[in-house]
Structure formats: structure tokens, C-alpha cells
Image 1 (cartoon, rainbow, N blue to C red):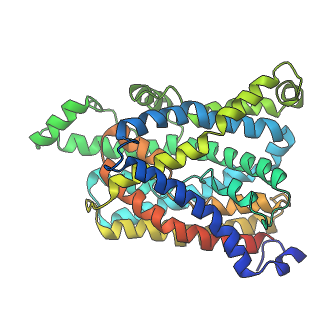
Image 2 (tube, one colour):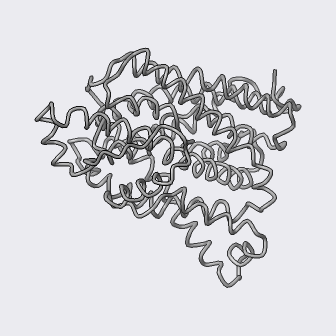
Image 3 (cartoon, rainbow, N blue to C red):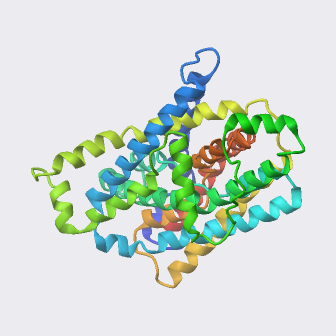
Length: 393
């Protein structure tokens, strides 16, 4: 049963929807493959150090600029209030993913250092490139390309900021505790690991961060100190909070209206934000090469993550959005509903790999998980996007 039915739905055939859904995924694949090619030993341009440095720039400069420029130009305080269900939807999906990840850990028993990673890999954020690529298609079902682009980027930017908030609080805590417990377990019994731990120079104290609750006062300082150690000054989602100030119409006009005193800030932020999408996908493609030809994790563990991410969670997402629609919680925008549905269907977020790098535990296993989940995502995103479009139109 459709979440919302209009005459457009009867005109859009399945294959035309499939083409519209496939082309954005194809663009992500092509740019990602180019990034993998640049990172290969044949070219060795996008080296590990280069990816790390570019990732810092993306994380500190490009993504916050994109979030600011997208939200400031199109979003008002009334819009943010009407989008209140988006953080609720993401919170429900994250909670279901956490429970299913915990079940997978209990069922398939990965290594102690991977337990937090397996749970965290059941959470993701929408790839920035998907919505703009959808909107730029000639036969896109969401109307005018410019309006679709501006609104779509606003939805995805807010979704990404919220997703990063969840990841850098709850996911960070789970992975930190898992890493610390593993290192403490082998601190004295395994000399080889002790050498690695001394080399890393991190996590030698005995303070554990609990899985729950999310309101721990020490978590924010732990995140910031670890980010600074790796060269990250602050979080993209943290900077995104600044954009809410531009929701007030009086302040917004000072920044977004052409000819206003601060209009150059909006224009500069947009210029910087345009670099976020290609750089993110190039880095993703380069990082995936680390997982090629490796078998450091049980295949059943990877399969469980794939099943949860691309079969169970999308089905749950449809149920959540359909229930919210029946209760009258959602605005009438088909694009907004489409973004809500996509939130349950995306591959693991790149931030998970950054957290694994922070604690120097499970980096190679994370690359393997990323490789397989993103390969499956190429097909899963296409099929589910087709289903979602048919539901919201």
C-alpha cells in the first residue's frame, strides 16, 4: 500500500523509476572506482596519508560549509519544526540497528575487538551524491531540478548532521569500550600486542565508556581529545548547529540575500561545500581498496551486517514512515518522505572507519566490511530507491 498516492504514481512505470534510481548509484560507483584507481599501487596518487589529510579537510571545512550553505539558503524555523520527525526516525532506525547488531555479535561471536565495530556498522548516513544526482535527472519524479536540489540538499545535510551526532556519541562509546576492553585483556598476556599498544600511545588508561546512556558528561571531551590527536579540530555535526541560527528570518536575510552585508559568507560557504561530495566519494573509493583480498573477519559476520543493513532495516523503515504518515506526523513533500526512507537503507558511515582509526583497532576488518557492504549497496540502493519512489509518489 502506498504511503501517499497521486496520479503521478500511475504514470511512472517500474522501469523508468528503476533507471532514475540506478543512475545516481552509477555516478557514485564511477567516482568511487576512480578514487580506487588513484589509490592503487599503479598510480599511488591517493595514498593513505593523502586520504587522511583530505579527509581532515572534508571533515573540518567542506562538510560544515555544505551543511551551512544548504540549510541557510532554503530553511526557516518553521521548516525545521515541521521536520521534527527526522531525528525521531533516525533514532528509531539506529536503535533497531543497535539491537540487531548486538544479536549478530551474540550469534556469530566475532573477535572481542570487533564487537563494537559490528554493532556500529549497522548505522549509516545518506551519501551526499545520491539526492543531487536524482534531482538532476531529466525524468526525476520530484519536480523542478533546482527546487529539488536545494530542498534535497537541505534534507540530506540535516540528516547527515543528525547521523553524525548519533555516530559520534553512541557509536563512538561502543567502539571505544570494545577497544579498551580488548586492549586491557591482552595488555599483560600478549607481548606482541603490548608493543603495538605502546607504539600507538593511546587508550592506556582504565576509564571505560559505557554502552548506555547517551548523556555521559565525559563522552564529549573524549571525542574532542581523540579528534585533536588525529588532527581533527571539531566535528561536522557540531558545526552544523551553527546553521540553526540562520533559521531565524532576520539573521537569514543578512547572509542569504544577494547584496546583503554578509552575503559573501553564504557564497563562500557554497563554493567550499561543492567540494564535499566529490572528495568524500573519492576518499571512500580509495579506502575500499584496503579491504580487497583480505579475510580477517568471519564471512557470516559480514553477511549478517549486509542482511541487517539492506533487508531488515529497509523493511522496518517502510513500516516506521508508513505509521508516521497515518498518524499525520509527516509533511506532504514526497522528497522528504523519500529521504526518511533512504535513512534506513544506506551502507555504514565513513565516520565508523574514522573511529576505528582513532582507536587503532579493527581498521583492516572495517575496510573489509566497507568493501562488501558498498558493493552490495550498489544493487540494494537501486532496488530500494525504486520501491521508495513508488511508495511516496
